[in-house]
Image (cartoon, rainbow, N blue to C red; front, side, top):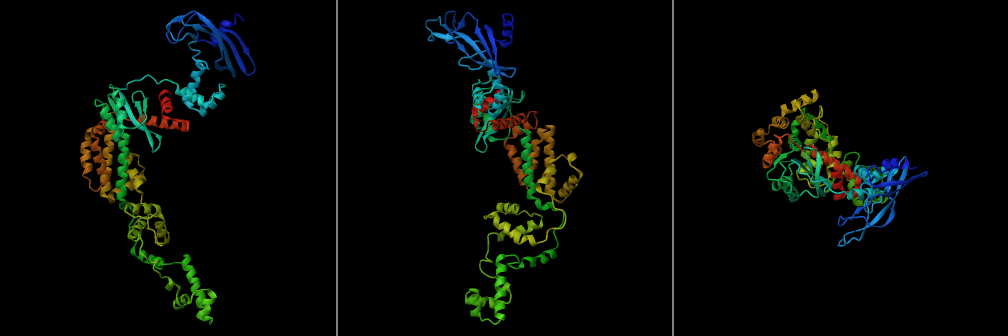
Length: 531
């Protein structure tokens, strides 16, 4: 055993000096290692003075890493020393073995480090399942407590910092993530997205030279107040995304130009009128009931029954029988003030008929369009009008016109990347609508600025876009660019962008899903910065 003990010291405690293995006991489920400390002196944790005077000793049982699938428990005898400094308030203190134990620790430092790594990677429940598979079981709360006890990483001042928002609680609580764009590492997380919070963070780091951000006003204001010396760079992806939204609105406003075939002849409209001429066509419950009553009353009258007799037999008033008897056809009974009264939908029926002939057969879409025009009622009335009146009208002949979103996608796609069929359909649309042709020219010129980094051409592009009175959304987009002109020009000139920041925002979403409701700000910040 004496020849084996030195090898056990090197194998079990390679990074701990002053520890000697006394014995090793192996059972079916656990390995017990008995060890003791061999140092002759220890430093007081309060006054840092060394002491050689031993007060006593006691046993500690820290858990260690598993060995060959078995739990390892260390029975470590440590000593308590008497502090040699008379002015020190601590009279006695227990020695700690660097790299092996810590005060009040129930695990060795190497087991604790491994559990922290698992917790940073997998968080609570998933991490607890993984530790059980590795024969070092702990609860999910233990893993989260270990993460929360970690100190913050050393603060560093990046030269190029990326700023973006992330959702702590979507739609309600938002925070700010800051990333070193050069090293792709997160620098810090802020609890909100206020301009003052970002400005205070930037003031403490005067070495920042470039700030990459989107066009949010609170980030622009915070960067201006906190780092006036830094160059602000607007992210190109956000610029292109905002342009795509404006382009889609412009295409939608000119959707009448997207019809690839003429409207159906007027004769078809005239033929369709009789279908909806009767106020109560076949299939209506009220109409069928009225027709049945009319047929029954007239059959009884033809059979020789008097009107009073028919009234008694059918349980109707005499006046009702008289009205039915005077009507030669059931359609003469289809009268009444509530059947033909004016409704709020009447003013929008011509527009609905026009959109129906243009190929829009979605009742919900039609309701959204007239709601934007001021229609105050709900969707049910529009659906009823579509099902009862418009369904009987003929559909336009020819292929269905492309949607506004499809045309927008064709305009935003590089011409060389379009398939031949889409390229021909886009050419036909632009030939039939000069406004959309102008929109395509502006989009492609902006795309050249984005891809070739020609930010010096932006003022000229803005002036040209603002002069397009028929493309209101594009003009508004250009007007908004003028409010943040310097940052936009820098974004279209400098190679920096916020792509790495967006990646960390997605990573934060994953971490929040792992921790569910336990993902408070402090715990989330630890995982983002230390993982």
